[in-house]
Image 1 (cartoon, rainbow, N blue to C red):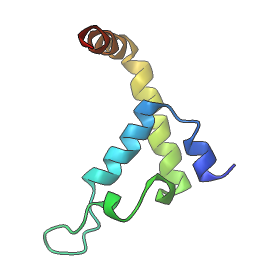
Image 2 (cartoon, rainbow, N blue to C red; image 1 turned 180 degrees about the vertical axis):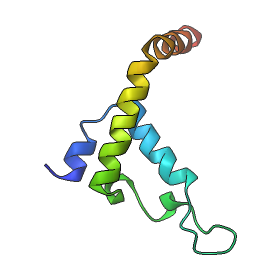
Image 3 (tube, one colour; image 1 turned 120 degrees about the vertical axis):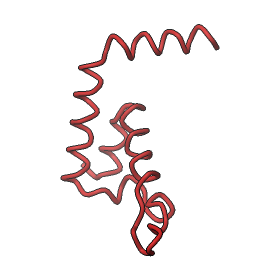
Amino acid sequence: MTKRQYLNTLDGFTLAYLGCALWSSTDNATPSGGEPLDANYNETDITWKSLRSMVADCKAFQADNAALLSLAGGLRAKRA
């Protein structure tokens, strides 16, 4: 399976987490921190080891917080 195929199997929560990780991190190319990683990289550039770890973190978070996430999803749906 290619990394793109693997990414296509992930849920929206996990994909958003990956995107946010790239957005919130910089390349440290300058003293001020450099460019956000999402300016030059995307989820396919994350190493397999890091990707698997991040996916596991998301699964654990969602399992540990299922009731709250369900409630938050219900509140969002009611506002729409």
